[in-house]
Amino acid sequence: MAELLPVNTTVGDFVPHPITDDEAAAMFRAAVNLFRLWKLTDEEAATLLDLPVRSYRRWKAGEIGRIDRDGKARLSNLMGIHKALRIVFREAQRGYAWIGAPNSAFAGRSAREVMLGGELTDLMRVRRYLDAERGAW
View 1 (cartoon, one colour):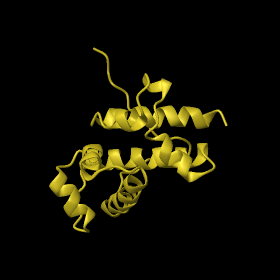
View 2 (cartoon, one colour; view 1 turned 180 degrees about the horizontal axis):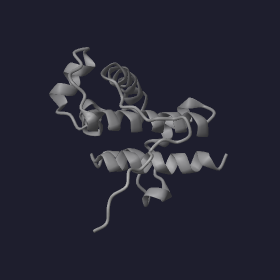
View 3 (cartoon, one colour; view 1 turned 45 degrees about the vertical axis):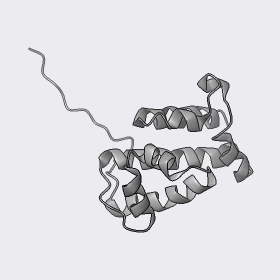
């Protein structure tokens, strides 16, 4: 019978660590501002975060609840998308507008439409695309 060997998941001196609750809360506050710039409704923002709209609105008002592992992954991907857009576009407004523009890479759909599929993998798809685009720089 084959034996599983331990895998070293570190890269150089970098050891990944889980996102803390304080970090997640800060990312949530940043995401609320980002959603405003992307011109998302509360319903759309709640979909991206996989939250009931009531919870999103309560959190948005400052009563941030417990952010689970999936929520932290969603926030991390949203921050990665924002960062990539800021690198790809010199003018921030162009990056914000890109989110809603049709894109041939997504079969004519916008990144917003892709992300509103509601799955974590939808956010990851947009982030991977942007990371690949900025990687050529």
